[in-house]
Length: 224
Image 1 (cartoon, rainbow, N blue to C red):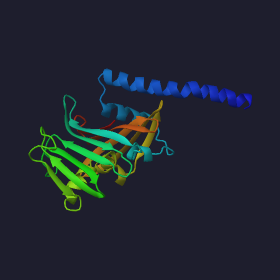
Image 2 (cartoon, helix red, strand yellow):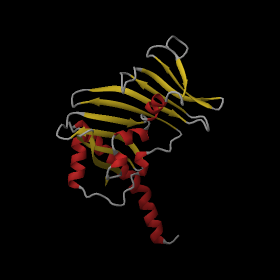
Image 3 (spheres, rainbow, N blue to C red):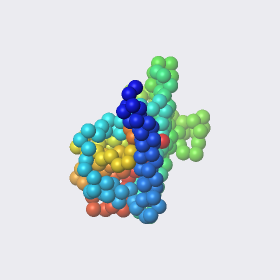
Image 4 (cartoon, rainbow, N blue to C red):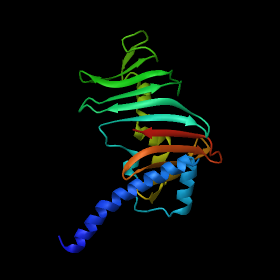
């Protein structure tokens, strides 16, 4: 390795982690100073040029073997956790579990889980506050309850991207000190929404959706 490449390599070892740390600290400071996620998105999209080379693929799907997503709605004063999704990869027998804390899309609150048993895939359901072995436990073949099966999958990270309209819209990418952010507009049943997803490097963290003109109200999905 020549001297020029050695210098570039040494600088990269220091600069890349430094920029990531500075980026994270910048976001934390903004939040501590009273900035909302929407404020930060507006600052970035207004003052920075979009990056045509920024790839959004890693932000709309995850290759993680296991992950979870928390779903919230709220405003600048309060937020409500209304659903949790967990995916656990198990080779050819992955399991997805959705916990609804309030009724959604015609389905009651409770725990919905998809899993494989003896080569067939099932969806199970049990009410909140009870175990899978308790009263109210239900078990169906996924082919018999396609709507329930689709409900669980719609809360995956890929499902969140679709429900937020990311797969049907033109996204603009921005990069700031190691932080990447993609923004897009989406018409949800005639209601225009401003949406964005941000993360560190190639790892998505949070996805937001705001009704245009109502910066206080939002929906949020948090990838963990």
